[in-house]
Length: 111
Image 1 (cartoon, helix red, strand yellow):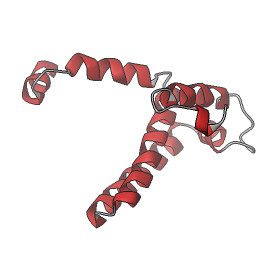
Image 2: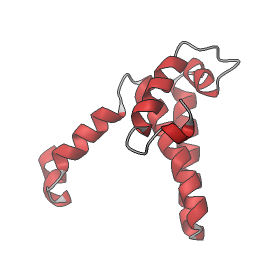
Image 3: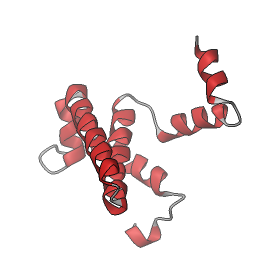
């Protein structure tokens, strides 16, 4: 499928499919497969790096840099989810559960 054919509403599902395929791909030919092979600590390190880069971009208030770094952050978050046998659907379900709740109420309900 070409990038043009992937609509914004389907991008997470398409990425999820690719990330699952990469679990069994050759780590020498796939960045994602190499992260899976290196394990959770490497994935977490990379996710942390991307979070810091997103924060730095936000501090600079450069919108194009914020978009670029947030895309990297989301991408690596998806890798983490798949490494933990979770998906973006699990996160969307949780966000849906919280929809309409005050953040204060939602946090109090966690205890």
